[in-house]
Image (cartoon, rainbow, N blue to C red):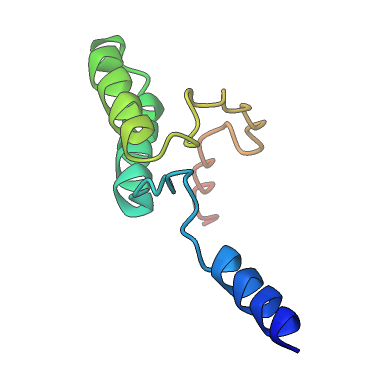
Length: 95
């Protein structure tokens, strides 16, 4: 009986020892990553070559806030323009 109690206590003591491996918790700021990615997207949407530095700066900030954030902005497909003509003027009224 004493042996059983001793083994039980030894098993409990082994299970309660702290793990030697450090737990790595990295804080991910999804809101900041989303904010910087959307700013980069808006700058890219203007298609102004002068905004390249701002685009890369915001993409870098998004990656720093969340390492899983996209590293680039996907190219946008151009949609066909259906109404590419100006409206026709009305004909003059008949007299």
